[in-house]
Image 1 (tube, one colour):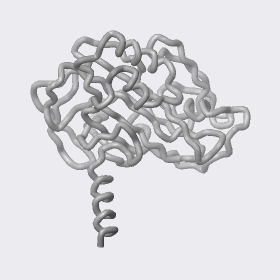
Image 2 (cartoon, rainbow, N blue to C red):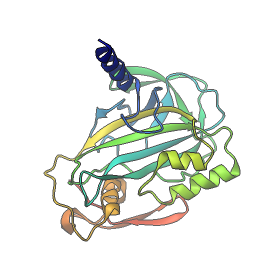
Image 3 (tube, helix red, strand yellow):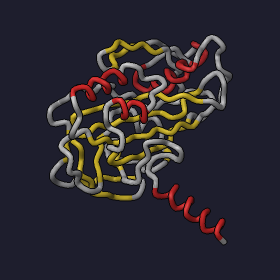
Image 4 (cartoon, rainbow, N blue to C red):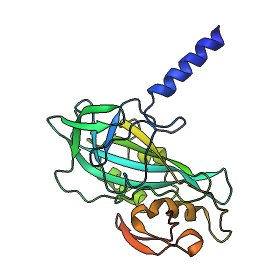
Length: 252
């Protein structure tokens, strides 16, 4: 009986969590991430074309903080040692302020009314948005996780820590980054969705390293060196203040 009750409680906890099981820092509060009229919520499966451009974000209840930051991470970057995976920072935007009124949005759960987070000061993203594009490698399905962080009391030292962390997208460790910025326990909301490469999966190139898989996920907006170099191209962009170049897997 006790074990059955424990199983029910664990199942309920997994339903309440808006971030993927095992991910920290977790959140039980909905973060609305809306792509041109569509908001994939809480593990919904969505195509990479839907998520190509930077989304709007919001919350179901109005927040009381003065400023917030959104962080988006791919948790399933392939490596040359599967099933081991790496992470990749897809987006870090600070300077977000809650709107005073609600906006009606369409989501995978139906129409919702959300308070959007606005970049009123036109703050430059510490890590510009990169659309999901999982490569044809194991795992084919990637969990893209977004967290909203209350940065109301962020110090200059904390901002510097975020800026430094955003320069290296590969291997992004959210708990460590937030701790270094003095933002532990400041996650206000979370969300995740899945984007899947239809496959088939190909073997890892032995000349690549773990970052190679990360670069594959990043190629949604960046371009890159393609599937076994036959279908790709290379493109570079600025990530924060650092010049980043990714040789990516392009999955068509």
